Length: 280
Length: 216
Image (cartoon, rainbow over the protein chains, first blue to last red):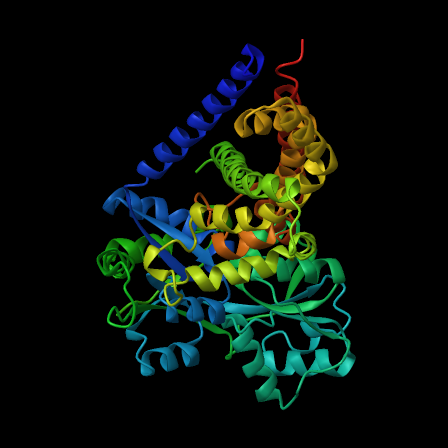
């Protein structure tokens, strides 16, 4: 009872399925290059630093680094579960704990920059006037004026620094003005711009996004604003990871060449380097 | 990676992941749904209810479940599938499957059983009966596939969680839109949004064409 019509219809369907299977196999086989997953903060990605460094790293070693840009807290959790091969974050207390708990064998400082407080251009809480260089004083002014403040709210390095400053100010931030976003740095800056709010950010991400934002720097160069980034060498006895590639990445970032490249990023575009290399 | 390279990669990956998962879900879904539609058995009502509920599983929840399964510490960790396109295909196939299954059962439903009755009265074999049922319900079945594809191509929660939105690797159109919007780059986000709609239109156009293949 099979007519010619139904046969050709089935044939066409089968050809399409065959092409799909072949396509899938080809794609699967072409992924033979060396690669590793780097769990990192959103600021290393949103500042454009990794987009600049990683192609150069690939040229030198042939390794493709796949960037998982989450907040420091989430990146650390991913590394604990063995789902990443490398870790580059910026929350010293969390990093030290991570190594102490045995997930990492070494904490290696690689570069730093600074945090700044940004806010709406009309600066309702008058931070630029009253606390241009003091983070603790700035936070006190924001809290007392009830001006909107966006917190990363995600255990990131920036969030950790923010909470430390609140602690130093002796304030527990609560109320409608304190908005916990649970998002990355770029997204939080966009939100702060939309809501005319203050927020704590690293300088690099702010500069990289300045054109799309309606925010100005109000407080900077305070003593609490050091933003130190570190690479963690993951313990490969805890999880099976790509140790060889991870070590090559760490070595390259700490090498003279890597450090020089880090120190040059941003000079052309912003007139100043966005990160200062400080590996020992 | 230049902007154009990135866009092409994102579009192709979205197509690959969504088509692959729709294909897998359709093959599995229809293979199971057609016999269920044609027979009457005790648990049938509950299976249909279950599949209807499964259509409403939030994609982020499915993403979380698949994430925990595929994580290195999870039961399937040895396969090293987390943060790869394969993981995204797995998650989407699981999301699309109940849609295909449930809608196929309705599409075949009464008509299928009538055809089966007539065929057995005329003495046709079971394979021929099956092919005839599929041909008769062809147009509805292609709509079911289109509905499944629609779910896959527009999905963002599950692929974000199990794929990781890695630039140049697991970023698809929907996760790109979410990222760029968060960064305030609305132009880029809308451009990709329009491309996504065009892609969906073309795929549905092709599916419609295929469903009319045998018509004179």
